[in-house]
Image 1: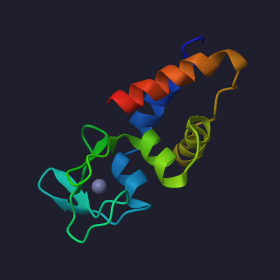
Image 2: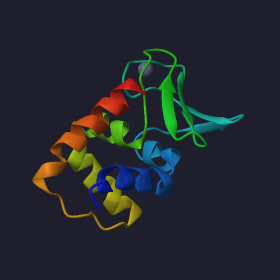
Image 3: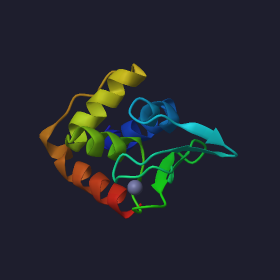
Length: 117
Ligand SMILES: [Zn+2]
């Protein structure tokens, strides 16, 4: 139970396709194995923003942005980690576990993890 944070984010990543999450904001076209769209994080006319559905992450070859469904939601909606989790949980139809104060460290660890990957 103490580890629910990591388990829960894994559950979200398993349940939600990154393509579904990203395509709510960015129109994507499938080319080969990847999905492509114009990067929402920098200005461009030729799509260099790629989404790997099998790996569950996006990568922009123009500006180098890289992340998963959680960091995408955080950056696109300018929300913090917990708000993003909550929103994705609603989207996935998974009830959000009760949040306890103690999990703040786990949240920070998770945020660090996202920014490294
Ligand atoms: Zn970009």
